[in-house]
Image 1 (cartoon, rainbow, N blue to C red):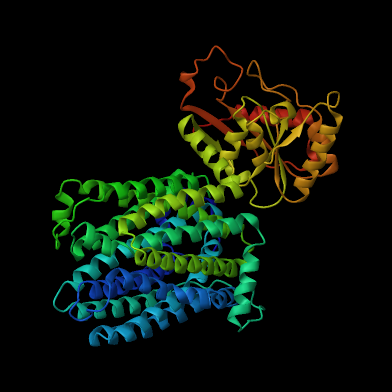
Image 2 (cartoon, rainbow, N blue to C red; image 1 turned 180 degrees about the vertical axis):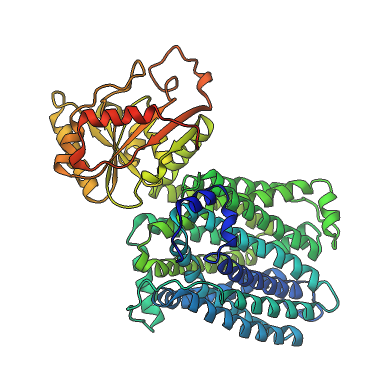
Length: 636
């Protein structure tokens, strides 16, 4: 049955996400969505290039203006129809819905073919709008299918493959569009290709296995406007999901504003032909594909939102650098791709576009995976539909901003600079709303620059529900290291004097740490800590505690105090024992170790099986942690 996997299968795919391509639960779907993305980009790029470089047929049109109008026209259906699409994806069986959507693609390609052959601009734009409508209906079922067909450990890899396939389709579609349009029979070639790919995509959809509807009793709301408002309300219920939606939407604003300028940028500032436009779009696409695939490795096969700030840094740095890399003097027009690449100074433009794409992959894949995992399954398609609505609104605004700035006299390089600078401001705003992004980034950076983390037993962390995490205490970095290993947020109990350190207090509050104190020193703080811990556990959260009450001095595990027992008396939840080793020497009591000698030191975290609350004793829990520490392995 789709969605069920053996442990051995899951372990193999931890090592190689590409194995999913050969499984029926993923492969046919991947091919169907790949064909749709390919056709979107062949047709859109062919349309823009035909107008931009065929001034005899379309003399009154400004290429830069049409590129932005076409982008806006393609995404308008996402605003209008995404809410209805989300309802259908939740209500209907997904493979059947995909087949209907892919059949509609064949009809739309027939309309596009008629427009291409007759060179009727009105018909071409109608087909573009219908293609956007088809994509709007495919989006919710596309992303809602993944968490239903894949296991949790496969989700990042699956999303990475989908994003890689999408941008590979952009690359190949862009290349073919440029090559075909430049030939004497270009419209005939484009027509033949888009029709053939539409038929192949429909054939692939016939092989997608059935996936049961998650809300078959859902009453369909035919009023797209009221349903759109309802979808947006659903998306705002979970604060983290909503801010991930905003983050994704910002990426599409950035991409729409950026990519729609490349034809005019190539022609007017690089002196390039259609080949150079194709090359620039290809560089961006290859970069996104590379970044998407690397997410699986960099995230440690889990949803790692710490990559999001890393990605946003690159999106700004290299967009700004692209402005300064733009030639200051106008080049002769009609330069081919090879001549452009070999021209002095072009390497910087090439590198900037590739790295913008790669950091975009780091940014977008974890956000999509986070939306899928944190959304309620019965409403997942509608939340993804809401995400598409926000994406469309941001992209429409991007097109309007580009048109306005160009009309006001801004140059295309200035638009690119504006995009990079604006990304800094937006990223800072989003991360101030959700400090979890930056904290995860610090965690991710820590275990890849200071330590080499080795984890065993990661499957013992439950996907849902409360748990009390108990670990020995080796250093001040223990909580960060454990947080980096766990996909779910953890609220740690922390000694109150450390919690109140100026400046660091902001970080601890952002982590939602719980200050705790001895009864003799601050009984009110202790009582409040117990109350806050009970509240967190009752809400289904993870709470972490170091029962020794302090960092080890000699490396041995000290006696466990009675706090765990008091917590479990009030809120009986499973207890997960954990053991850390290898952290002594940096941020710990071990002055005999040289500070620099601990950089990139191997750190081991062994995670034990959950223990029922009625079976927990302080002595037994300590023995379990000691046993875990003595069974450390080098398995990552």
